Image 1 (cartoon, helix red, strand yellow):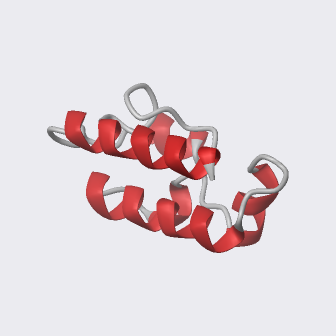
Image 2: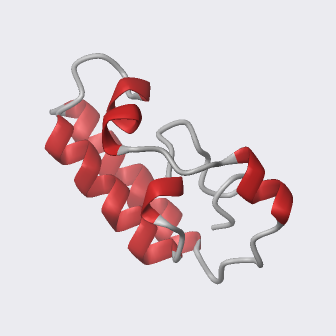
Length: 83
């Protein structure tokens, strides 16, 4: 429950800071190739609820305008996602 609250709080802060998405560079596209939902879940912390994690991934992709399959659990809002 605490993890869920923290994830939602971080998401809310990141979305509040999101003003625009910078142009995606070739380097960014190479650094973050598309990954499947199964790979995304494998990269999450043990015990993470699959449906919640994928819902957060969908929200981040929609709100920041990034491709869903290029959102990774280890990405940082500002440095990696341009928020």
